Length: 307
View 1 (cartoon, rainbow, N blue to C red):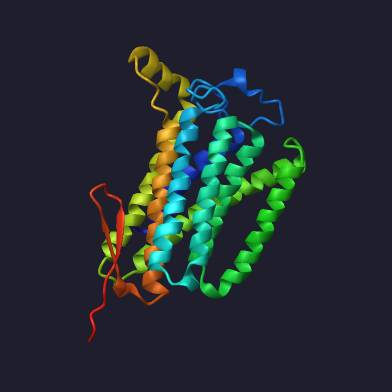
View 2: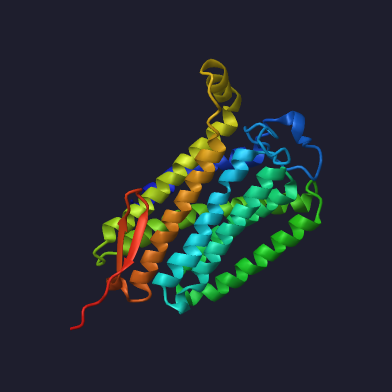
């Protein structure tokens, strides 16, 4: 995909998402949200609260599907990275797996409790994921400086957000800055991903690697669309499915946003790993990329023939 196309399309949806996230946050079960309390999350999604088999879990579907991030992060970090990358290139990818797992754990706790501190853990995990990808895409000579800057920013966000009242100016300002920083990073890593995937010109599986990026991109676009629909038209969609059609609400946030972004994260992570193997380790001829019968990436090591 052309980086300009990626940037334009993604910018439109990210702006819509940021505006709704900060200015019109979904509070769709207001009788249970107590939004005036500093301990309660800013958001209450379309899924009805405390209606699942576990009475202490606020949103069963949203909590359950959040484990997808944990599975993706653990598999990527524990299986793919050590098999295909030499030790000196593994650090940032291990951090990427850890950040994905933290995001999943934060999302499980957030949707399970609808507490504000758990919401912050979820958001900080998402921000840290984008920061790690930025480190992977950054030229090696600049990584130490960028890593130091990110370390300071994360420590500042953690200290301010967890030690100040959510209604204070410094807290609100830091939270807004964190949301904007996440949005800018999200846009940049997809433009950068398009550039990196197009730069793999000599590898025999170049087309497949580019397809990894394309699938990741459209997974995120579809996930953002379902996120917006779920928040904006919750009552209308629920009326259509539950009243007119007599079937269960499709749980767009759980099945669309969580599973869609988990799949997008996985494809993007594998794409960046492939590009790193090809470009930085000079072992492009030892990697074979493809798809399995489920359409998921399959990576194999190719045994080099002795000359």
